[in-house]
Structures are given as C-alpha cells and as structure tokens.
Image 1: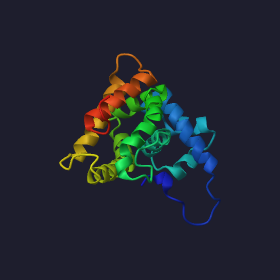
Image 2: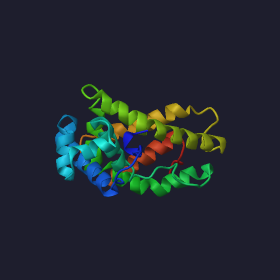
Image 3: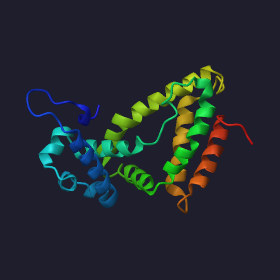
Image 4: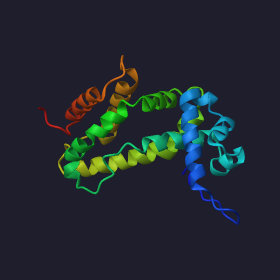
Length: 206
C-alpha cells in the first residue's frame, strides 16, 4: 500500500484532507509541466502552499507521491469491474462506458501523464516500480477477476488466455494513446476501441 494511505498513529492534530487534495493536485501539475526530474518535493510543496514536512508526513518519497498523483487522475476513468452487474453483461457495460473512455483517451493531460510515466523507466525506475506495485498490480487483479467471470459466463471462450488479453488491450491502448501521428478525436478513439473489443470478442461485428 502507498504511504499516503497509512494513517499516523499517536497523539497530534488530525490530518487535513484538503491538504492531501492540494498536494496531489500540485504534484500532478508540476509533473505535467516539469517532468519527473523537475517534480521535486520542494516545488510541489510550494505549489500546494504547504510545508515540505506536511508532504513527507503523508508520502515517504517523491516516487510514491507522483504515483498516487497519477492514479488520482486516472481514477476519474470508470473501469468495467466497478459494477455489480453480472459478468454476462460485460459487452453492455463496455457499450455504456465507451463514450467516457473515448473522452479520457483523447484528453491532453492523460496523454502527457502516460508519456511521463512510461518514459520514467530508464531514469526514474522507482517511480515506475511504485506505480506498478501500488496501482497497476491491484487493477490487473481486478481485471483478471472480471475476465474470469466473463469466461465462466460464456462471454469469452473457455481457452481464452486472460493475461494475454489484458496485455493486448494495454498494448493497443498505449499504441493509440502515445504513438498516433496526430492527437485523436473522441470519435476516432471510440472507433478504435470498438475495433479492439470486436477483435477480443466483447463486441459483435456490425
């Protein structure tokens, strides 16, 4: 778990949720503007109008803070596993979420954040490791559970390699998000996602 979620023990003033929000917002803004190297705790604290010690009480490292800031932006994108509908309804769930996903994939901020994160590997491996451990792994486990239920419900063939399906979807979306020659429109993003889900088996050919 990220250090942000660890509640302090012992006496003292309770944490201010507004400070958490301000720090995460500032971290996101500085990361977008300055990149990982320029997103120092000092700059983030100044942008959030808090003392550096206030940041360090919540996050033990810059990498943990930036990982949580990126995830805070991504949490606004709904996931197909965030529903209590039965697994056989997964194609319908995807249809309902496609407009929101299409808008999110074409938002300039998400494109910059994704590029910052993927480019962090060689020079800032601790950021990628923190994001992978605290956010990617739990999200992948939830996605696998959803796909298992879909496979059991007959939405996917029984021999489907679920780990490979997730890798295919992640790779295709990364390709679309970061390597498109021009910034795609929401309509282009939706058309691309529809093709992707048809290839995987979640949608029928028109």
